Amino acid sequence: MQLMMYLNNDLIESIKVDFHQLSRPGYLGQFKRVLKQKHFSLIQQSGTLPEFLVVDPIKARTTETQTYFYK
Image 1 (cartoon, helix red, strand yellow):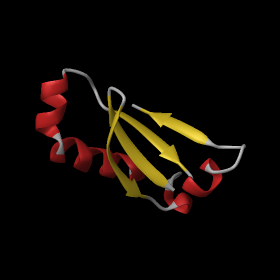
Image 2 (image 1 turned 90 degrees about the vertical axis):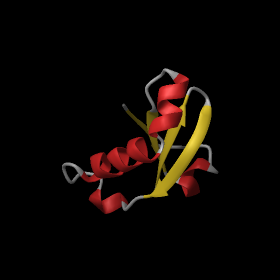
Image 3 (image 1 turned 90 degrees about the horizontal axis):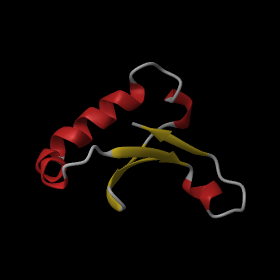
Image 4 (image 1 turned 60 degrees about the vertical axis):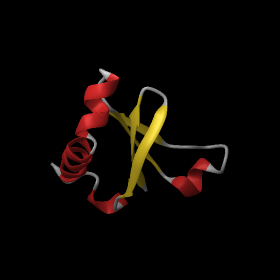
């Protein structure tokens, strides 16, 4: 699975995450914090908050896709 960070309609970066750890409290939050710190200047320039999306790239190629949005 991939955690993807978007600003507006632009994909900024994606990070591979472990599907079995998604239910663990704070698991995604640690990655989101790192991405926000890493791309702080881009976030300030855009003037919008980043959006995060978790996608299974294998299933994304099929007709049935599970997609989760996180802010």
